[in-house]
Image (tube, rainbow, N blue to C red; front, side, top):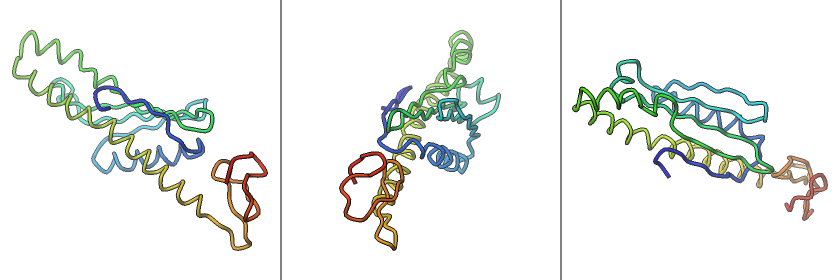
Length: 168
């Protein structure tokens, strides 16, 4: 994955999108990234992640990543790619014409940035693993079992959810 775009369908309930978005925000903010979450009409979110000011932007070291989490049927479409600062068009043109040493810093910035999408995907997959393992083991004291697909409480021993039909 890694280069400039990562797309993957994550198997998990789309209701976990806000949880995934908050976890991505928390982990990137802990590393001094600026994170902004925008809710979409589709029920998904766009997450903009950036680090570095104007000086780093000119040198091509400003990191920028755009992550989209979009509900798709009974799964989550994960898309991550470089943000507007990550495209680094202006710094590249400046360096090609005037400052050859700046080109080295831009290449380094692009290499560092290419790892951000993998990190965001790893965070999303970890949240889904933790939530899915929790919900499959989530039994009520009264002998009820919760459906991992819709959250409906079913009688213990049922093979299918009586609300959505998903195998338990």
